[in-house]
Image 1 (cartoon, one colour):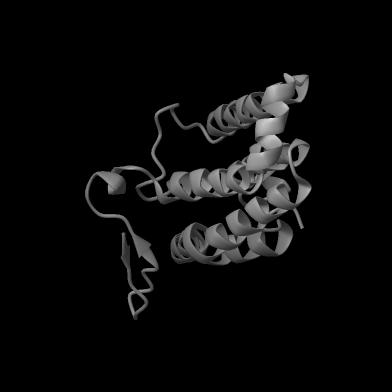
Image 2 (spheres, rainbow, N blue to C red):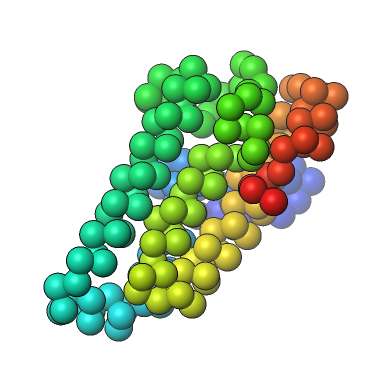
Length: 165
């Protein structure tokens, strides 16, 4: 992991094999792991009790994956589309009218599902996720979109919130 704070505005850069995985995936995984770590005792007790609530965790993750597939379809991206590369068009219709980052909002589903184990753990994981995404991924994506789409992106930012609020 390489951290740079300088004029090039790079905050995090992953080197080597780790760099092949998108930073947003790392942040998502770390956020979820943080939530599970904070809820370790509750998770162990829930597993031991055989509670049906455990099904909520994988179901929330599947709902997230389905959301991503539907959003990629709306954006006319292939299912193997990478987040790397220059955007070809500014998508502002459909769910993008309500959030500039609906895929990132969708990942709040698995994080919120951690609340069946521990509300504070879920809240901490969600807060970490939103803060980390705002400071890294979203900041650079919005800078790139502003450069590419100018006034159109400025209008879009005024009409659609970054998250849901």
